[in-house]
Every structure is written in C-alpha cells, then in structure tokens.
Image 1 (cartoon, rainbow, N blue to C red):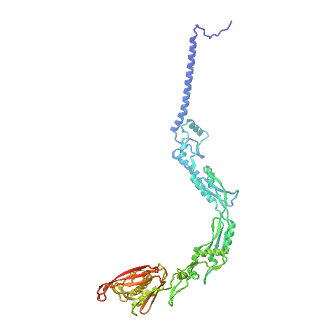
Image 2 (cartoon, helix red, strand yellow; image 1 turned 60 degrees about the vertical axis):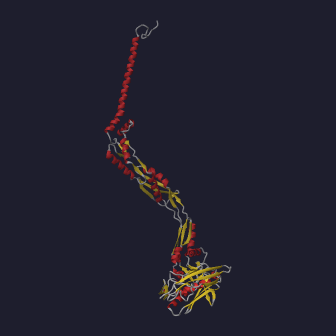
Image 3 (cartoon, one colour; image 1 turned 45 degrees about the vertical axis):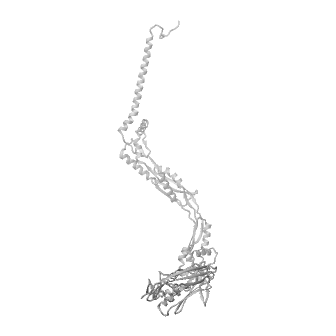
Length: 581
C-alpha cells in the first residue's frame, strides 16, 4: 500500500487556514530582521558622523602625536601652534645650500671654490598660516572616513603633516645667475703693455662658464630638502678671442716702435721724441680678436708743446704786390707749415712697421697762402688806372693825420668783387696809433678832435676811385664847401658814423697806392684800364649868401664808357650850407 504525506492538503479537509498562518509568521520575522538591521546601520552612522562632529566641537588643537618635519606639535593650538610652525619655518629658511665648482670638460678646474647660501636666499619659503591651517584641519575633515583615519593614526603610529612650502622662481633664477657669475671666470685676453721700461706681454687663457639655468634646476630639489644640501656645478670652458700668435705679432711691433728715439725734421728744425715719450703716445689696443698698435694723437698733442713746434712751423706768406720805380712787382708766396698731431701719430705707426726710417721728414699740415704768386699774376694789375692829388699847408698838425692814414691804406689789394671800407681798415683814430688833434667839422660845427684832417685823405681817395670807374658804395660830402676840394666831388670821414666804401667792380685786381709829400697827398689806383671816365660838373644853383662863404646846390655827373660801346651816367647832388661867423 502506497505511503502518503501527512501535510498534504486535501481538498475540503480544513488545512488552508494553517498554511496562511505560516506565511504570516514568515513575513513578521523578515520585518523584524529589517528593523534590527536599520537600527544597526543608524547606530553605525551615528558613530561615524557624530563622533567627528563631536570631536570638532570639543577640540580646536592639533591631534595628539601630530608632527611637522619631525617636530611634535600634537595638542598645540592658537599662538603655541603658530609659534611652533614659525620656528620650523625659520629653521628651514636657514638651511644651507651649497654650490660646488665641478669639473671643466671632465677635468679638475684647478681652482677649488664654492658658493653658499640659505634656502631662503635661493627662494625657499614655508607658509606659516597655511601650514597651521593644514594641521588644525586634520581629523576635522567633512569626509568622516578621512577624519576617523587621522584620529586612528594619532592614536597609533602618529600623524605626519606636510608643511605648505615652495620656491620663488624669480629669486631662484636671480641667485643662480649670481652664483654662476661668482663660480665662473672670464677668459684672460692676450695683451701687450708699453711703458718706459719696455714691453710686457700677457698671453690669453680660457675662462670658466657655469650654466645658470641648469644650476637653478639642480638647486630646486636641494632647497626643498629639509636640512639643505649641496650641488656640483658642471663647468665648461670659454675660449678667449685672442691668440698667442696675435700677442707675438703685437709684441714684436711694440718693441720695434720703442727701439730708439724718433727725429722728425722739417726745414731747418726738428721734433725729437725720446723712448719714454714714445711710450706715452703708443699703446696696443684690442679689437675683438685683433691686437693693434695705436698712437694717441691727443697724447702727442699735449706732449709736443708750442715751444717745440716753433722749430718746424711757419706761417704762410702771401704774394706781395707793390710798386718799384713805377712798375708792378709781384713777390714770391710761400706755404705755411703746421704741426698736425693726427698726421704725426700715423707717421709713428709707419716707423714702427718699418715703412719709414726713425729719422725722417715730418708729415705736417701745409697751409697755402691766401694769395699765391700765380693768383697775384692772374689779377692782371699792370698799369695805373687813375690818380688824384690834394694839397695842404705843410707843418699843420692835421698833416700828421693825413699822412698816417695814407700809410695805413697803402698797398691794399682788392680782388674783383671785393669791397673796401676806410673805417673798417683803419679803425678808430687814437693817440695810441699815432693820430693827433686837428680841425674837423662835427654836426655842422668846426671842432678840434683826434684824427682831425683825415677828411682830406677821404676826398683824395674818393676821387681816385671815382676816376678809376670803381663803384662808390658810400660817401658823404662836407656840410660846408671847402675850396681846396672840387665842388660836389669830395667826402668827409668820421669813425664810425661816416665812411667811404668802394667795390672793385672791374674784372681785374686793384692795388691802392698812396704817397705824400710835405704839402700833398696822392692816391693812385692800379689795375688794368677797363672803362673810360668823364666827369661833368654843373652850375652852382640856389646860392645862399654867408658871411664866411656862400651855400649852394650843385650836381656832378660821372659818365662811364665801356669797351663794348655801352655808357652809364651817375648823377650826384650836393647841397652846401652857408657859413656865418
């Protein structure tokens, strides 16, 4: 007989209620387990979240067993913590940083040297405020697991907090460049020195170069390392621009330059330069890779003073144009010689190079005369063009003045187009020049003054120029008519208000020749005949009687007839005042 399950529900046997009860019991057990689990999670969450919050409320100091760079700061807060971090910062800033000179191209440099600084000097700094903030934030983070982890470490192995630190790039770069300069060494360039004792040479040597950029990169980690440290600067050589061969050549040239005294001759004189004087003037200068012997024109100019130059210098001499026995005589012109320091300096270098002997002709500046013999001949002064003479009573004081001013004007040469002024040429009439008192007319009054009487020379000069056909630029007649002068064709003179000025408007040169006797003065114009001159004097008009002499108006016409057939007329009007008393 087959077995049957006793819990099998048979339809209609009343077992359905029992099944439902069992299902309900299972559901109640699941709800109870879920409630227990939720409570446990809430409890854990309370511990995880609440404990750090609680610790943050009850504590404001560093967690116990907290250290910064090996210094215990646990439990410190406020000013104590700040002071402790500040002390750490000061110690770190003072850590030594050393740069040692390394090898030069893989070899010892032969000069042991180093440069030392503090970490602060190379740009290191520790931020005290941010570091304090970093310490006090540990164990109080918003992340509960990180906060619990910090608390756990402070209770077990200890909590290590890194400082907030860094390197100032500009300060590091600046210090590295300075250290590179101190450790490096500029190349020694070849040189040659000249003095009175001889020639001294300096041979070139290579220099030492430190790469400042690479040094800065090596220094950065060392400066950030607590306790500091050292780095070795890798060096390279820097070749000098000059060579030993260049020094050899310059030395030989310098030695030849001061091998003995130099004598520079010119004419009958000479300038001698001793060895010690040559050493003052000569030197070897470097221009890049070249060494060149130079001579200082400035030093030479100071060394050779005027007294030494007098032996070789002379002034230029113009060709003289004069009269002798009624003939024109042209003298020989002569060049002048002037010492020129620039030329002589170059000559000293030529002697050093062996291009000239140590005794040679001075290369001086040649000063040509203003008028050479050829120039004088080209002026075409060959004959007397005009002449005029006025007479006076011998023995009067005014005669001295007339003769003196004639002598001062004698021999003046005017080139074509050149102007001449009596006042400009003679200057003030003074006793120092030899002029004496004499009668003169000043502002219509007869007076006695130094140089009185020179108006007679002015009239004589004016008429000579007038009949020579030369242009009269300026003249002024007397206020009263003076019978010894041609009416309307005379001139007065007073420095520096009244002048007689002419221009040589001829195509030839003009020589002014003056002469005098005890009772007359003559002015002659020499050149080449170039125009025919006629003078026409008009009748006296508007005569006004005076107790001494009458006044009147008069016109004089100068007629100029040129070789080409052309003609010019120049009319000059003069009014003389009547003289009374």
